[in-house]
Image (cartoon, rainbow, N blue to C red; front, side, top):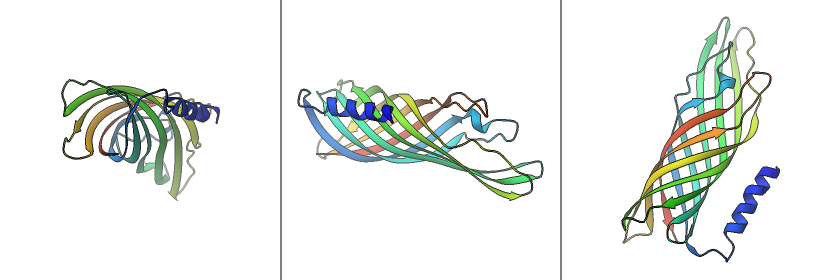
Length: 200
């Protein structure tokens, strides 16, 4: 809870009148999580292929100065996989819901197309559910609430005649998971996503 309050505090400070706010926008996003490596789902009981998961979300953007954006986003990624282990079979569903804050620096080289890089923090609710089909028992990791951090690189396209900005980006996320029962450490993955922001 303390870490969530710290994130909120950063937002309050950055949104104070001391900083020159250049614009505000809201938008939607979607994409795919790739190479999701969660050691808690890769053990002697089962090994799941989580190479690709769909992701959807929404975001709010506050512009500071001409080249810096502060972005808050809510995202959900999920995957349902069927597997068999010995006499046990069933479906495992993984959900990763996150609240993220990202600072982006835009390279103001062209008026319409702007590459950018950035970094940020996220609070991740990792949920695991298993429905047993027949025979035996299978242990899965317990649900977790964990802090993560990420780096992004992308490109934004601002339409001069419309209050719309389209973007595409790649992001690397590292979540500080650790479960002694499963002897797991960090969860990490990459995300390829795109979206549109409506500016005000």
